[in-house]
Length: 237
Length: 263
Image (cartoon, rainbow over all chains, first blue to last red; front, side, top):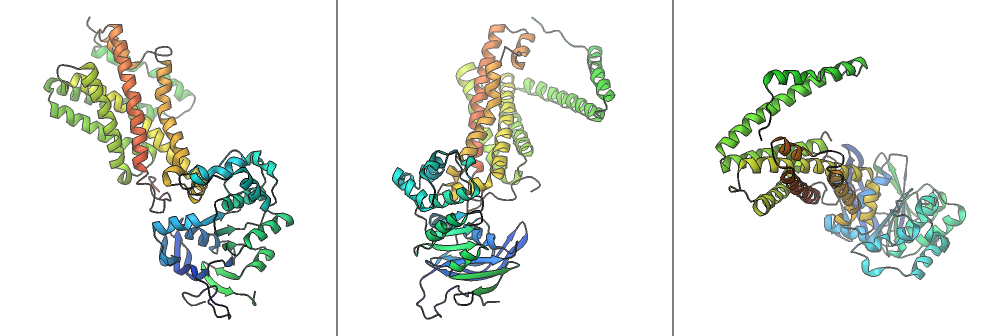
């Protein structure tokens, strides 16, 4: 088992280590009284792409949701840009982060309404995207502009995932928490998604089994029964 | 005009009317004989007790005693609202009590002090039945509002969390469920106002007419009470839901797991 505080990238590979963006330090989480994560430690630098792997129920998705403040910590701590994990920091994380699950909630009738939904909230009201920006975001994900007027209940699972990513791009998010985001995509759409997240400005913590996705990640964290079993870095994936 | 009394032998005859549904329900094998007997017995005893209380209250007509009676009604209503809405009393009691009390007292005071203006503002003959009617309807509205809101929030938790992660504040993220819950809570009163007099004669009006009152006077009182019921139900539902938002979520805006009774 890796030592407490072990990092996905610790600068020991000859490259200068970037600023630590997210640090999990002996984090434990219980859901409905059942321990899901135990003593989990790792750190992620800004711009890094990491993937969590492990059997079903090993706690991969819980790691992503814990970072968003959706599960309380029962032990340990999380640092985000050196800030302690408190309600104010969680608000900052939520401003930075986009969570894209296997079946994202679009929360609107049409795709256009789904894309502009966040801009109704006070936090984004003054940054409403133009038609050009909407179309550009869709095109980056290989979605045709005519999807804008389609009803959300008529879009496929893969399209929903890409619409959710487009919405996150419009919001200027730079931390992506992705849960099996390529699972419902064909090869072409997957290529578009992989290209989007190759952006060095995006930090990505993901759950994935797709070999193409895993190959693109800087680090692979293997979970077993809610514990970090090992960290695989470049060269030994 | 005096109301015709129902003497004790006639009361016994009255209970005889339920023999028919009792037999019919028994014949179709519904198995509710025990529940019917308990229901009728409880209703009779409770009303008999209320009769004794009210008689005493009307005779003494003491402002403190009347106030105490209203307070007791508010506490029981608060208890009942949370029990029926399936929410833990230790969390929500104070918020529900504050919301219902403020709304009921406002409507009752408005009606008594500005509209009816009886010689004694605390006169039990006006205060107790009017506050009781307003509170009873307020209770129904609050049960519906709280139950709808928290059921919708649990059912649509992913949607709520998505709104939060898209930058919504807690209030912004709950607003779709909030609006639906308030609408559901006032709907019965709104529907009642729209059909009043067409489908049925309202209880208070019937009571006044049976008590020898002029139909026009009964109509005016009925309008007064309906408007006050509508006002207090709307105020209490909005206030109660708003106050509950400070209780039902943790510091990260996530709905607490243990707010439901038995949860």
